[in-house]
Amino acid sequence: MTATLRSLSGIKPTGTPHLGNYLGMIRPAIKLQEIHETFYFIADYHALTTLREAPLLQEYTYDLTATFAALGMDFNHHTFYRQSDVPEVTELTWILSCVTGKGLLDRAHAFKDASTKGQEVNMGLYNYPVLMAADILLYDTNFVPVGKDQQQHLEMTRDMAIRFNNTFGDALVVPEALIEDKMATIPGLDGQKMSKSYNNIIPLFAPEKTLRKAVMKMQTDSKTVEEPKDPDTCGVFALFRCFANEGEQAALAERYRIGGMGYGELKQLCFEHMNAELAAARERYDTLRANPEQLEGILEAGRDKAKRVAREVLARVRNRVGLYQ
Ligand code: ADP
Ligand code: TRP
Image (cartoon, rainbow, N blue to C red; front, side):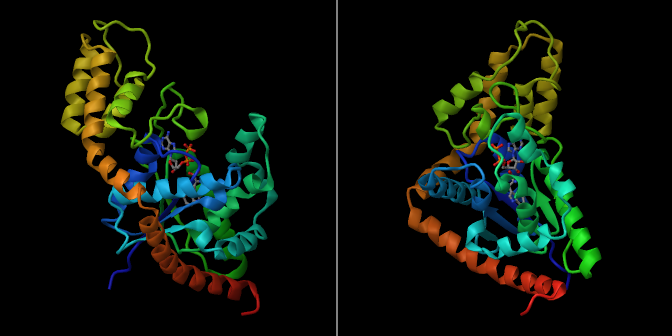
């Protein structure tokens, strides 16, 4: 029997899922179901580092559950759950924090970004990478599909797993990040990274008209239609690439370089490709999102599957460090 490889990833319920989330994480994660056993979860403990409105946590959790369901997550063969439904992860967080040097966390982007922006740095934000490592290590994860911005967290996770194994004997699987280059960082409406916190997102399941408007609003420079343009540095072209096949990309890149193609035309084409990929899922999303009991059922089934693995791994870890069982 060949051992099945396991992929795991999480996403925070902190706002409306957007195209950056879809291209950077959700789409590749769903595709991985074809070759790996997958564990995907809603990182609500992580969301608590910033979210202060309790009812929103629930709403965003359902938004994400409906999003994964609409995009083809196979709940029967894979595991989809809410992080806080498996509180064992907080125990592993503590154990890992006891083998993690403070210097490692001092280098983490998450809290450094917040402190440069003058935002509150609470201890949850500071410990964020340890909780994330626990998320991953608690499930014997082999691969973690994420956007490029999470690379540092994955390196820290590997460091913690290796440190634990060297100290107590091999007990934790050392995971690898899976980062798709083409999707590295999706730009938002203003050209910076698309992010819930920058107010520059294109919502994944915005109604067709809103989606078109958002694409038409993307920032470009002021080159005229006639001027040649560089497909490799243009944000709209980057988005087009994510939805077009290779032939379509090559043909359009050629026209773009020669000149005679304006941003308006490119945006329209980009919208059409995007809409063709998303329209059916958008309809499924609207139906699913209107049915919270069904979404809760999905999460409950996922919790039971996730707990089985978590308990087994945690027992192994407790045993290694000498905690009473
Ligand atoms: P946000 O920055 O909007 O708060 P999250 O931090 O919740 O997004 O990210 C969830 C997942 O989506 C992560 O795997 C992250 O790497 C990916 N992601 C978020 N924004 C982008 C983007 N602009 N381009 C590519 N991937 C992204
Ligand atoms: N930190 C991730 C983000 O901001 C979310 C996350 C939490 C995660 N735990 C994880 C991603 C474990 C992958 C694996 O997007």
